[in-house]
Image (cartoon, rainbow, N blue to C red; front, top):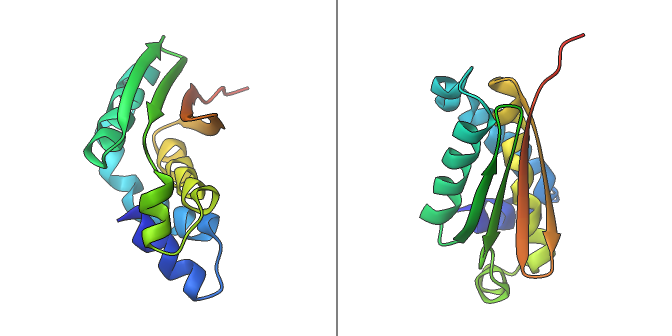
Length: 127
């Protein structure tokens, strides 16, 4: 589904990040049960979400304030190409978790390290 959402956005002159932001905002309320459970709980749910989409979860680590998920094989270049996307365009969908994380009191980031995607979740700090 993420490939299709990004392809639709691209066909309508929008960026993968636009598609991701729209999707994240639409799903944010569905993650409410994770509020106050700490970064590992949020990371585990994020890992489950990636695994259900076909990714291979390599690790989930962290403590209450910071957690990290490492995933491979999602998106694949072949799957992205099927929808007329580059893997870089498909990767942009990882931004969808930003609004979700913010909704439950966390910050989210992602980066590609060769064939691995590293997803991080950090608890918001209040001054």
